[in-house]
Amino acid sequence: MRILISGGGTGGHIYPALAVARELSDRYDAELLYLGDVNGLETDLVPRAGIPFAAVEAGKFRRYLSRRTFSDLARVPKGIRQAMEIVRQFRPHAAFTSGGYVAVPAGFAARRFGAPLLMHQQDVSPNLSNRLLTPFASRISVSFPDSLRYFPRRKTALTGNPVREDILHATRWPQADCKRAFGLNPHDPVLLVTGGSQGARHLNQVTARLLPQLLPRCQVLHISGDRTYNETRAAAEPAFTERPEWRGRYVLRAYLTDRMAGALAASDIVLCRSGASTLTELATLGLPSVLVPLPPGFTGSPQAVNAAMFRQAGAAELIADKELTVDRLASVLLPLLENDARRTLMANAAAALAHPEAAAVLADTVAELAKRRGAD
Image (tube, rainbow, N blue to C red; front, side):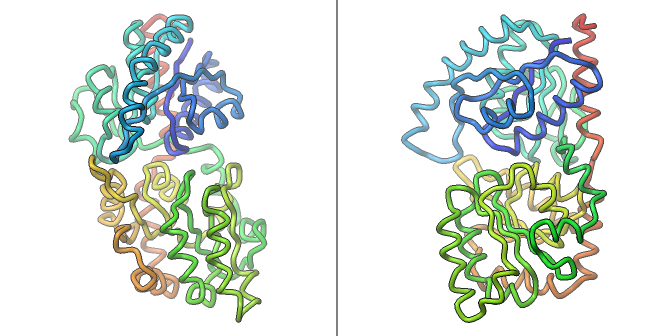
């Protein structure tokens, strides 16, 4: 069977698609083609995963006004034409999309040539790309129960969000060994700070200023993002002027492509954004968190909706980005670091939201659609 896979722009869309692709390859021996954007992270991550890759010039549906908004929208028709030609040659039996603006031309093209489409909704509330694809989707899967109300009941199912294989493996890794792998003391708690694949400047700045209060209480594993690594390192430096011994309690990395599972497994609490893939990984590993959603654009903030759902479940604390200050973060984070019982309750609440079987369930659904189309 031939399966078209698409989803891109950020790791949050790419990694779930790769998880489904791996299941389709391993269990169904499917012939795969991943359709991505020429400017997305998928141009690096997908070939590295050993999956055939094709790229189109997908226009980006931005959450904010920008000079590039109109030029990007002008690229949409070109991206659709490119996707049509790629799909015409590949002739897929079915397609799977995991979100992101590139999913629109991929999904349109697949349906234009008769391939059934399983569209996956990651965030609680659908973004513009999935709203556009919804009428064309043969099946729709959602990550969280709160998403079911946005889609036609007859073709929508709750499956959870696919998670990378290494995250599943990390559930069995000894935490002490994971801490040692980053040069950290296995007996002291670890706070993981991450802004996702693109980093988060505001989160980095506030964390760096809070280090004098954090480091006496915990170790900090800080993933800054490539673009803000140098400025984050400079912002953290004053914390070590009077206490040079604290350097061993602070580990700064630009990005951990292949070691993110280990970083999560080493953590006792996580300070992060609230994209759907991030929350899925927190749930899979049963990690308590303090969530700082991406600020809203003119279309709102899907991450804020995600974070509110996690907080309501008792799995996380929530701080709006506009309210994120050193004092506000200290008032939320420091009590959690000193309350093991509270963190345990939050961890259990997070674990209750996990669907570790999601990738397999979605692969089975795609294969079923492909077989109805005549695939072997």
